[in-house]
Image: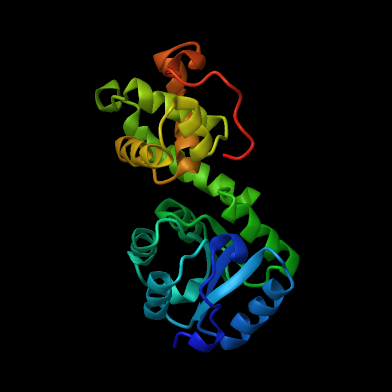
Length: 251
């Protein structure tokens, strides 16, 4: 059941800070996590849900930055994560797992999860994870990085033939170049001279063309295939006409 009596009142995102939904079948975990976040000035729990269906309802009702999701709620499902991503594209997902299984971890990242953490994670690390992911980063430990890279390399062997190499436009390559430098969508939009939504649209097309699912896989693809070097020896040449002024601090 959605815990409506514990939901935060409707407020502006600036007052709410990082808006979090706790989705967990066990009330004791929800209570514990809520207490952890309650002492943080920049994190606010806006809703709690004990089932996947209630989570969808909460996402429809409350603008959300981060969802902390119990892995057991999506166990045995194949489309739960993509459906959540489609339902709330701006909400970033953190999945808590009891055991770290290679194939499961890789698949979670592939489907759009931004972080996978153990159920036993310390409060300090959980808060740090939420902040990092809310800021647009991916939370991934060294072991998971190795798993993702190994899985990607196995998948990428089918893309090494010149016959199946995707064709990318100059603007798509410019955006990819910015991604490999760690730039965020707002920064890329300013650099190229367009809007953040246009950058998001281009990224979706790039993901489809290259067969990747997120920024991490895109960066790994570029590294493995030396994608930018293939098109030009100087990635700076890829940048289309854009403002020459330095990036502003409030982007």
